[in-house]
Image (cartoon, rainbow, N blue to C red; front, side):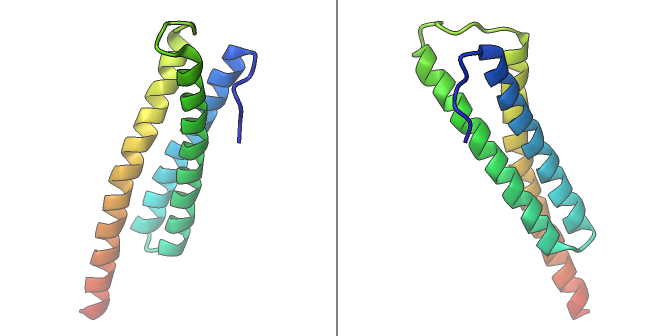
Amino acid sequence: MADVSPDFESTIMELLVFAGSARSSALMALQQARAGDFAASAEHMAESQQAVKHAHHIQTQLISLDEGCGKLPINLITVHAQDHLMNAMVIQDLASDMIELYRRQAQQEARS
């Protein structure tokens, strides 16, 4: 798991990469479910969840370093990384629900 680097920009880039990976994996999970491959879908969701876990760890470290006192610089890339993490988490939630709907649809079609 990544630790906060002394180079603040590198740490933010790590956060951005993990968040982007989480988003991509969740969307891939959704695509696999749409195709009926629920095993692959589950693998991609697990990858997405692991990436969010790493990103959240970095975010938590940054928050603890800042202590709510503005000790860390806030710039556009920091906001961008936070946006990516938030979007990845929302996409995970929606993808989970949609994957379940695809699963139910496949089960109903199998019964017909």
